[in-house]
Image (cartoon, rainbow, N blue to C red; front, side, top):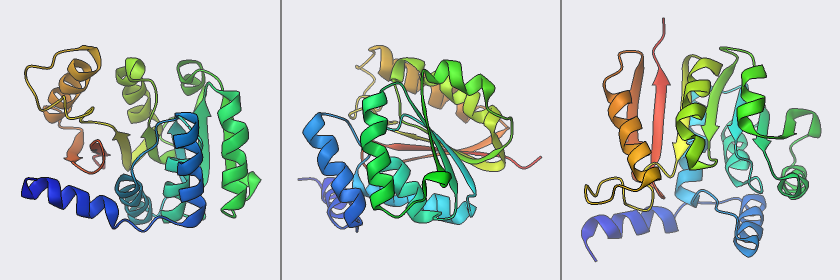
Length: 210
């Protein structure tokens, strides 16, 4: 195993995942719902804490793993989480409650993100997390950049898409879309951009203060 692989494995295995989030992860695995890795979650928590986030919107609730991690870093924040699967929200609601997050601070919206996001207020969120259908990724990023405040963060897990994005021989739809997004963002003067290799890759977009 290459040294980089050893480092990646070390980071993943040594992420300290709280019990409530671990329970949500276990159920996600049982039901075949993809969740961010523990190290990715820990990084989300650090970013939320660094932003002193008060308002977070999440596209793709799953069973609550990524949202729980964001609230781990910003426990007083209000979280709005959108998912098309009502069954997922039923389970996620229990995990948020088990972690001690009041229902009044966790708003779960069941519906298509493409229908919900245009109704969200511009510049009103400290962080926007996009962990949803890759086919709508570019549209979601456009919405996210509108919704996040100046100096806020747009976060995209799975940004390396199973290690296919760095491989020029891989050109299928999701890989090509992510590669194009990274290229376009790299040319923009409106944002700061970085990709972390934790988990399946975490794209971090910070909007420049105006």
